[in-house]
Amino acid sequence: MLVAFSVAPSGGENTDGSVHDAVAAAVAVVRGSGLPHRTDAMFTTIEGDWDECFEVVRRATDAVAVFGSRISLVLKADIRPGYTGELTGKLERLEAALSAAEEPEHADDQ
Image (cartoon, rainbow, N blue to C red; front, side, top):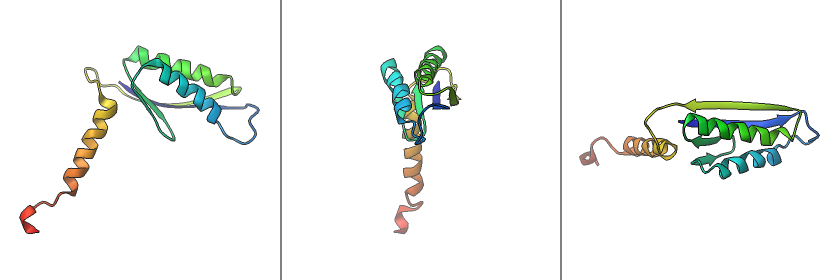
């Protein structure tokens, strides 16, 4: 399964609205988990089985909890039993589809 999640604190002492320290604590948990992962500007995506993924999400949420009195967690999961390597596989298939769409329909028309 793939789990994309975003976790952030609120209600803390941070007055500039930045949550980078809290996000860094969550990402450190993800990186330490050993699960395949990717972090972008909005979400971190991890790949593993149900128990592995949700344990990492729980621990990342706990790591963020020290930064505020309230926590926001957004989560999206792609549950596809029997498939692995989808963290990169989905992107590879997307890029292949985009490349195919860019190719002219009739090479001899050029």
